Length: 186
Image (cartoon, rainbow, N blue to C red; front, side, top):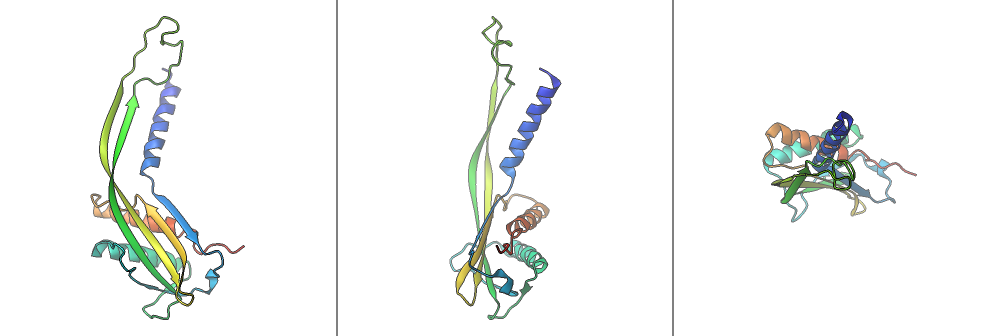
């Protein structure tokens, strides 16, 4: 096999593994809301929502606070804050099957059976348990009593990761979740 073919195969494999592990971030917002009117926010607990442990809760809130400060929002403890912000966290497990083959795609006629050659390949596989953690961040317009923003990031929480990695993932997820806040008015 040519060296360039091997390099391309390795690059594809690295990209595939990286995309499987990447955080999936989504958001939605009320298009009829004037987000420029929001200046303050208050943290609230969403009734019935699963929460993080105390340390992760502080880390998440600090990351959101820092990100919203860059967006011009001030944190408040007053019930008169413009926005109420809450979150919900979920951790689940999924089985992941990974396989790869030693047949790097020679194609017909190149060691295959068309020209009398003998072809062989071996497929290897492994299974693993992947922790899938998701955070949903929700913003409510206090005056209108309506949800105006919702964003979620999956593959963010991993209870088995080292503390530094957990905090890094939270900060990264929050930055992605709030990247498009406030939404541009058209």
